[in-house]
Structure formats: C-alpha cells, structure tokens
Image 1: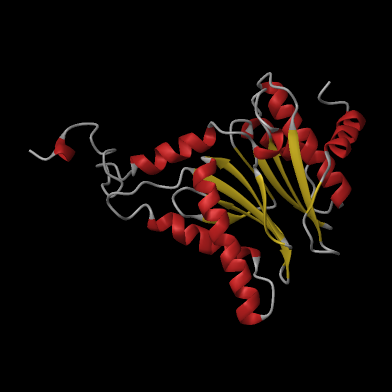
Image 2 (image 1 turned 90 degrees about the vertical axis):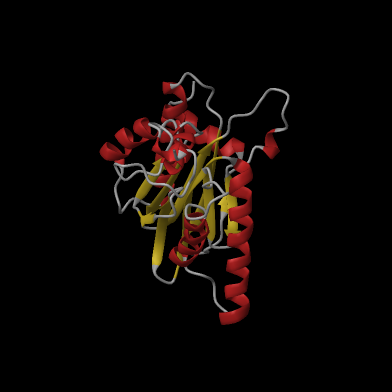
Length: 242
C-alpha cells in the first residue's frame, strides 16, 4: 500500500495534494511565518515605510539580527521566517536588480522583483526532494509606477497592498491600521504609524520595544534606515514603549 494512502500522510512530500486539495508543506511554512517577528510595509503619498521587530538575545550582537534589507537604492525588503532562506532570496533579488540596471540602464520595478522572487518560491513547491521557502517578504519601493508595496507568500503568490503586516503581531497591527491608516498621509505620519503598530504588537505579547524602521522617500528614491535615537524620539512623542 502506498504511504500516501494512510490518513495524515499527505504532508510527507511537497508534490502530493491531500484529498481536500491542500499542500500541507506550504501550510506548515506559512505557520512558521505566522509565528515569526512582526514586519510591516506601508505606502503613503510621499514614499514607503518598512518596519520590523528586532528580537535579540542578550549575548547576541544586535547588528547581526537583520530583518530589513536593501535590494537596490529604491527598493527594500522586510523578512519574517527562516533568515537562512531569506538570505538566498535577498541575494538573488539583488542580482536581478543589478542585472536590470546593466541590461536596460534603469532601476527595476518593485513588482518585477516581487514576481522574480515568487517565481523561485513557486518552483520549490513543485519538485520532489525539496521544501518550500519558510519565509515571507514584504517588498517596498519607489519606481516609475509610483510608491509600491508587495507581500509574498511561501507558496509563490504575491499581491500589492497599501499596507501589509506579517508575523505574530499582525492582528494587533491590522486593528490599528484599520482605524488610523490613510492613503494620503505624509511620510512623517506614516513612519510614526509604523512605529506605533510595531511597538503595540510587541507590548501585546509582553516583549521589549525593539524595532527597526526604514523609509524610501519619493523625492530621493533612496532607502534610509532610521537611527535608534530617532525611533526612540518617535516612541516618546507617541507615548508608547514605556
């Protein structure tokens, strides 16, 4: 008898659908993502903002706990899940970005880089002997089409968003965004809202308020990582993280 005939055995290979049409390995990868540190991407009238929780062990050097990455000058990424899996995708995305500049002499669009990353992810859901990438990425940037935010899924799908959160604190973030997010807000207010969302998500899980935030203004189209001092100023102004 085939091993896949046994109840509950459909999760033993990535290429086998269960009788109700599910790929369990992909769902397990998504569950890993849902348990990870919260990340957030947001577009506004003056650019885009990326933010992430930074959970650091007391004996770990803080600068090696990376959740925010620069893909190109005008595109950044926030990752949640297995950092080792994300590193491979980030490296490949950077190659695509630089190849586009060399080939077409122009910066790559955010949607194009999102599709390329998801092409790789999807490939790893169709072949035996491999597993899905256990990571979700929020890619945000400013290109010729405007200010863009895309969320990617371990299955290889991607969608565009005005604001998107992933990770353990996503429900807390969504509740705040539903009430306070406005598409026409400026970059300063969008940054403050990002800080508030991430700190509240940490507080809801009784964790210390340690976060990283990056912005990409429409005017410069260059990613800038905010200093810890600047983030602390925002937290003080907002009255969060005490």
